[in-house]
Length: 47
Picture 1 (cartoon, helix red, strand yellow):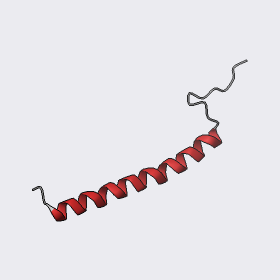
Picture 2 (cartoon, one colour):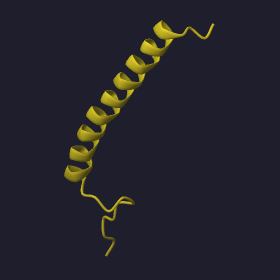
Picture 3 (cartoon, rainbow, N blue to C red):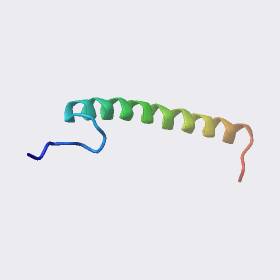
Picture 4 (cartoon, rainbow, N blue to C red):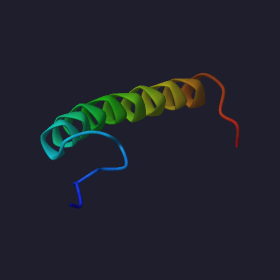
């Protein structure tokens, strides 16, 4: 009687696919932010 309902509404396969894309996007975001901070620090050090 109990149906397997996931809080996200995604199947496990969809969740894995989403997670893989999320990891790529998050890594790119962090990389761009790190480069931007480095460029600003070279241009105008704040310490």
